[in-house]
Image (cartoon, rainbow over all chains, first blue to last red):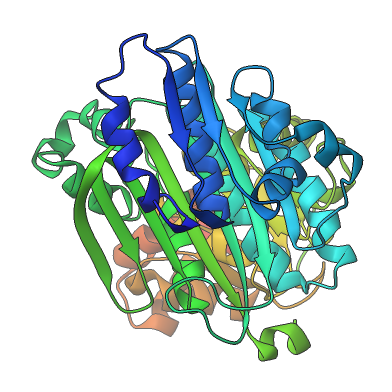
Length: 290
Length: 190
């Protein structure tokens, strides 16, 4: 593992985690220099997976920046008492400073009724930081719809994790000028394919995880098949794509990323749950016109 | 001249549900319960103006659970002869209401403000659009006059208007016409 901690960079760790059976485990992040929200949520999901399967989980970190970032993102609030680390967390707490780019620290939630509070808080932060109404709506509706899906379909012992971070450069793809907001949500539920399989009319769309993900991104596709259901994900993918960003949906061994004019699918190592990463670039026009 | 009908204005952002930020189906259900209560308190023929102008954010789940299901129940006759009108300007927030109603093949009347020219949000079958427009242009019109205006026979015209009435987009009234016949009159609702 090296450089940036993303969902993908944890693939080997997830792969190895499936073989864990009680023995002590070390998650080695010593080569990580930069953590994005997707990596943070994926790490949380990985540690939940491991903590449920072994008594001792160690997290190996190096340097100051990554431990400090994890502390600022409330990571140790969730895992400080369950995961051992070589980082001196107590000293980080003393130096704790708010990072203006942090729009939502790592938050753990279980139920739909927690979501309005999460949205109210982030909306206030966005407003205080000068985000225009249209941007706030894009960020908040993405977060609310994906969190609601996680709360409804992603039922698991740990619920779901979400984090949101703003950057003064584009971090998706090659690093370049611009601004970008990254939203990530991970749950430990049964995954998209099994959820959609509950509806027999989707039988031919649930042969593989990737098929199921592609279908879940269509308007009106839902587990219950009720009219009106299954619109949220398709609409927020549309918002991200129109803004020049992307929405990446991952579950089981499938991954689908929606861009403005294309949809990429890939078979990837198994992820035990459902994971969503949304990139919303900020453009000068958006910043000035609102 | 449109007759004054009993009406009530329900300000969605003014309720106890989270004010300007309307997200999740759970919140949508709470708002829908209140809207249903308000609808049922109206006399027959009454209009409930659902004013969402104070709302900053309405996600799809909220829009579908509150307005999508409400309009669906209204179209299936659950609230009798009581109508819904959305009070909202033409802005991004409408996208989710539009998406929900389109998913459900339904529509509702929308006005920028009470008394303003009405428009449509959602989906009205193409072959009903000119009928709807003619009724709104006239304000109030009999089936015979409408059939003449549209160049339709009376039965076809009545069928179209009946469909619009069932969708909750117009009022439809039956009057006894001499000698011994029935005459239908259609009226705009906003």
